[in-house]
Image 1 (tube, helix red, strand yellow):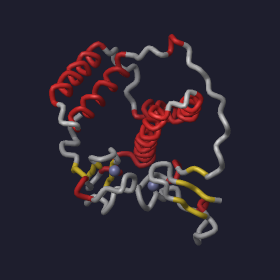
Image 2 (cartoon, protein in one colour; image 1 turned 90 degrees about the horizontal axis):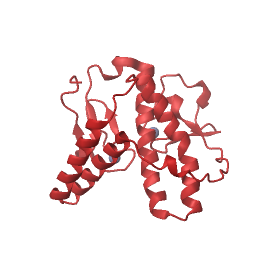
Image 3 (cartoon, protein in one colour; image 1 turned 180 degrees about the horizontal axis):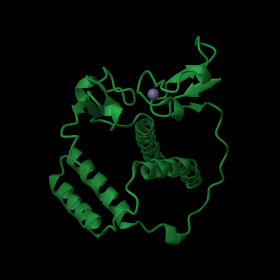
Image 4 (cartoon, rainbow, N blue to C red; image 1 turned 45 degrees about the horizontal axis):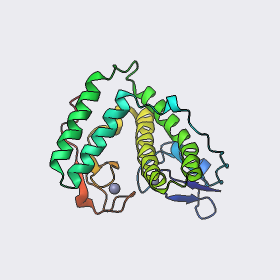
Length: 209
Ligand SMILES: [Zn+2]
Ligand SMILES: [Zn+2]
């Protein structure tokens, strides 16, 4: 049996390794990206999913979703050196955040649950993209899913290890893909997008809420 890291694609092949995957200790992590053992998946082929066309009333975005969308567009404009457009999208994001009702449950468990729901929704969403032959949407889903899996692995690890995960160590962010690395120094190469270590930024002021 082969087990695949959902974040970086690292493969643990029972036939090649001395210890079968199931016998690795529970605190074993992906040697490349630190994703917890519990997030690994077997390489069985995914079931075929029939595309489900979404009713119109579900197409409306919530203020929170719009805020997220505008924040992303602001960042994208910034990267393209379109500062005027970036400012306008940032203002829109601020507006939508302000009108966003407060979250009922701000716990890390709720966050983990939402990330799991998102991950489960990807195959269906991909099937809709395929049905409409929308390659642009399909491509953005690839990165969306990658980032969601990165966050899910990180939150899962936090649920398993608690605050000790962050004690006496630094946190690094890949500025190219958003991958988060915990350690004294950044990895030589980003395990997800393969940029060199100088593309990693140290996260400062992490005790602030
Ligand atoms: Zn990995
Ligand atoms: Zn990266």
